[in-house]
Length: 276
Image 1 (tube, rainbow, N blue to C red):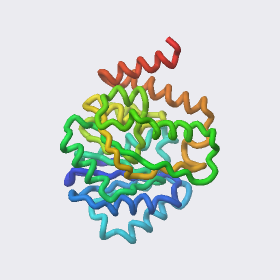
Image 2 (tube, rainbow, N blue to C red):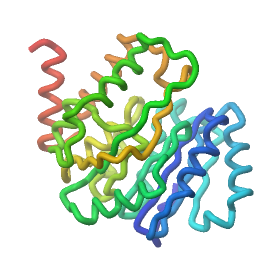
Image 3 (cartoon, rainbow, N blue to C red):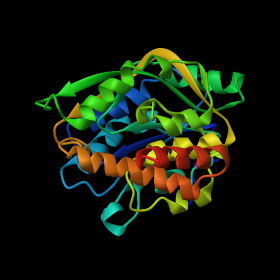
């Protein structure tokens, strides 16, 4: 994919896969932002097998006048089936100062979200990643003992995640961010790290951890987006052992590919998992 985002300071990347029921709401929530700086919109669908791509085309036809700076990628072949990961592939060509994520089954609830995050990062140059509080929206019958549901509820209830500034290694020790709440400083994420993110889950967390090599984690207490948990999404229904193995693989990746304090903290966490 060619480089994207040369005019504006901010890119909003909307990532979709089999989210036909939700993608229009996600896109509407992005375009309803009351932000003083213009932004680029990048929509990427990873070869959905439902009608998500049709829904995106329909939305664009209706809203074409309101999205002048946009790029749409509707893939015919799924990246993961090729051993690649969507988020790193989308992020690498972006060259705006800031990047904000919105997954296709989530949506933003505060029209001033982008403005607040850009202002925070402008005022706090130590901040490589800025996130905020979210509301958990459970749709359908998600079992109460689902590992992802339990871990998400635990994460959102943690008081120590609601600190305005935290050192980067804290994010390695405990993932406290939700992807659709994140705005990152693009220059803080090495392209070489993105190239190395293959055949691995939780790349949203890995990307934020890599950004922590260059700064700290910032938090805004405002609740500005909804994180939708639904029965057929990527993480639901997975056995706890598989969930734990995915986490271990992420730490192993960081222990190999991250740098400085982030790499050291990943190695510490791996030792803890191994009982050493």
